[in-house]
Amino acid sequence: MGKVPNAESATAYQVGGWLFQPRLHLLSQRNQSRRLEPRQSAMLACLLERPGDVFSKDELIERLWPGSIATDQALAKTVSRLRGTLQTEGVQIEAVSKSGYRLVGTVEKLTLSTAELADASARGSAFRRFRQRPTWVIVATSAVTAFVIGWVVAISAMLINYD
Image (cartoon, one colour):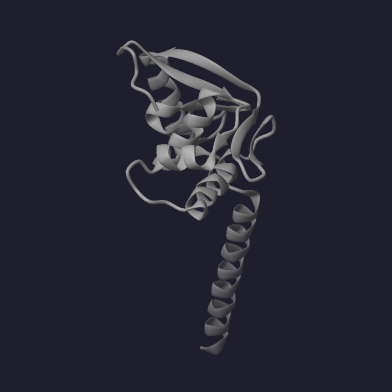
């Protein structure tokens, strides 16, 4: 991940359906936002430098773990987590047999103003706070509530009849 050339603009990428902001380690879409782990963010930024080109495992390890010893397993774990986070049509991280990895799909490099980045981040955090709950959670909560209310009413009726 390179330094931002000036304080007025920053590079972002349209990756499939996601907007990726490397400086913030943030992926955002219309209704959700996901913060990437630093290594996931660094890997995605690296792959976005040359979409479609193969990055060797050694090159990725050197860039993601500079001055450290890391294994192919650590790299594979980072790739797996990043794939799980992206989960989008139009872009994927492809393993190239005995060679490395490459990013395949629709990618567009964008330059956003600081205000646009702040707006996108604010929208992402608002969506995280107010995003819709899964239907099963609502149904399960309603069922438990109905059961508890029914149980309280039944116990109350039994106590009234007991006296």
